[in-house]
Amino acid sequence: MSRMRALVNQRCPVCLQGPVFSGFLRTRTHCPVCDIRFQRESGYYLNAMFVAYVLGFLLLAPLALVLYFNAVSPLLFTLIIVSVITLLWPLVFRYSRVIWLHADQLMEPRQAPAAKDASSPDA
Ligand SMILES: [Zn+2]
Image (cartoon, rainbow, N blue to C red):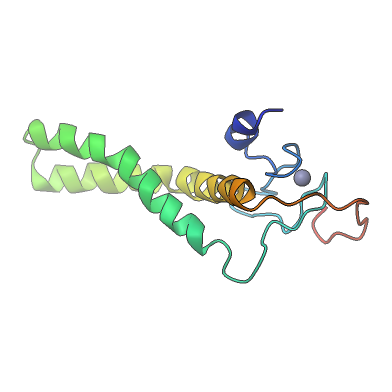
């Protein structure tokens, strides 16, 4: 599986196969396939917040411009933007973490452990 496909499918940045999430918004602690620990250190996902800012901007700026140039009322503008943010937030949350995991893997590569630990808490 290519890295881009793994990123789109929200897979592990090391083996490119294990799912990063175990629920709607629940991030696994370890990859169920290669057993790599996703969160390298405390506060690791803080950088995903910056990715979320960029994603949010890229998704909302075009919409805001369209609304602005169509002279939408401030109330309607606010309602539309808040609704879209609310709808897209789970998507932005998930992809910001996955993008950060893959970017970090590219900047500082790590190998999967040799043997999978069967006592993984969220396997
Ligand atoms: Zn993995």
